[in-house]
Length: 258
Image: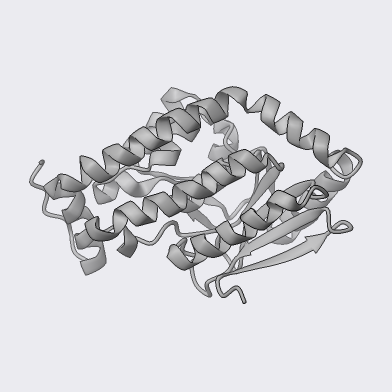
């Protein structure tokens, strides 16, 4: 039995709706990642699936990956498990949509970035705040430049600032913006009916593979490099560890600049 995600099948079982649901901020911790991974693995034999959607239960999409699991002793396992989700989505090539309400930060935004389409309502707040904690987001460092260009990607990655739905739409980060969560659900359903259901599941997967031939090459070649940089270089610095620990201790970081 899954404890941190739920799944619902709609449109004659051709659409899988994955709901992140930990009862609070839908934090992508080890257990949630494992449950998502197991579910995605089961889709390798689901030739009838035409779309996967990701959405957060409650008011928020996801606060991000577990900061606790970013500690030096946990970072290697955490990143390995998290990055495997990206490789699995790459290999499945099933079209994906992120439906975003409220906060979509850090690892939550990275999961959304991996999706082919990103829809949101006007409550959405998107950001990669990792640099504020003294670290960096490996997937977003690759995916954001591919999605919105280097200049805008660096704006988000270097400042760690959070942007609203309208600015994210202007950035080209969001495909569609709706008034509220009810409209988001209804609008996504309309989009599925109009653009997905009449098409072949097999052909949709080839369309994803073809449109992402460069995207997937970059992801496959550079994500392992950034994972190694994070684990073997970044986490050996004083400040990366101080940033994580100070956040968990609820105090201001004392940077040593090394």
